[in-house]
Length: 240
Image (tube, rainbow, N blue to C red; front, side):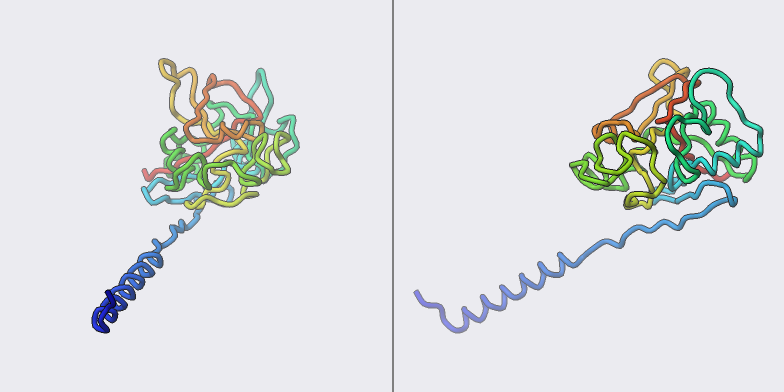
């Protein structure tokens, strides 16, 4: 049965309306979140305020930033293990500080608090998970597969894989603006291992980790006085 001109015109109009509506929906894009970086002092870590209000360091604390703490306090640590300025891997001041224990990390955060008048502390596991994923879903903030040259791990396709830390910011930032959101160094958190605060949890994976360790579901732990050249620091800032 053939259509009348009136019916054909009506169908054409409805089709055009549906196409226009679909195009409008496709063009509806939420504005990209952009945090404004700030620092409380010239040698303090650069901080970001995330959508939740969490203030966290944009990158792992660098050797250069940690050295300011060492110079100001005369910090040193005796005993077993590597040290922040002798990590047994090639590093410069723009690499994340490593060979720090949980206790070292807490001392650094305490010094930042005294120097700036703000309250600095180590992040919790849940804070790190939120910050690292940048409101994205998947195994990693950039997608399901580790891909190539998205982070520094033992098989991430970067020039530092399985060899050493990389300069902070050598890879793309996540949607919140975090540099090295995962990989490069495990991050000490304030969370105790279940049943014992003599051990604390770390998250994020490192330059020597398999890709699976970079998933935010992966958590390890170690004693509070144990340093490794895969362990590093991020800090959270709170108003006093």
